[in-house]
Length: 254
Image 1 (cartoon, rainbow, N blue to C red):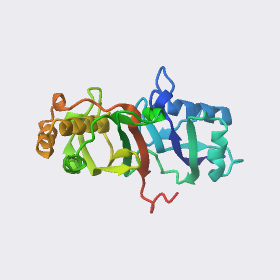
Image 2: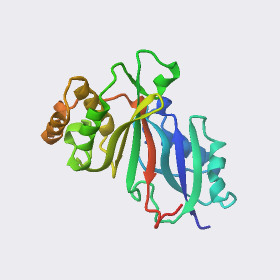
Image 3: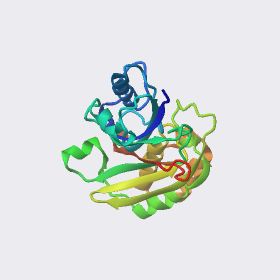
Image 4: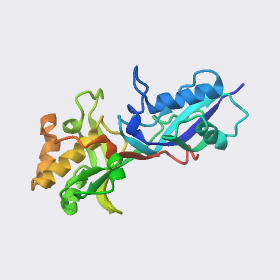
């Protein structure tokens, strides 16, 4: 029986997960999805994700793919079938069949993340699970001036975590900006890929620089130094969402 390659778009609340990737211990998004597929198939099914979100990080548009020999479920209904086996903090939003060459990770052209900040001395208690509350209102113009300097191809050694195993710390950034959205201040960043904890390290540094009266010049010095000790505190995971994965629609239209 020929297997189908199924692409799924997944949303999850990362609060109670130890990240995306399967680990020796700890509840992971990949692990829970693979467990659901194992119950559906009667054997283990390997899932490939587009991005390895860290512990506590959420997703509204994570993408994954897997191969199945179940021919009784139409491709667009596969997500509904999976949801009946998944816990409430993971939902498959869409599913479709794709070409066998499609790989959620290696076929991705761009990854887009959003980080939610909430500026208030007191706020809605349920916001605390999904944003970083800062007490002082930042200068958005100054933040965007610093963020603009990140666009393009740069060595982000300064903002990579100590445990990052990437052979190259060079990344291509397509966009980076701050803007208001309802009661939140959003930091949105799009790139081909990111270093481990890179977005949170960048955001923590940007906020610290602004609060201390510094700006674009100092941020450029930090970036060019390639010195991790220059980075500020890492922003908490709870405000970060993997928003969208972009693929070449001419090749993979689904």
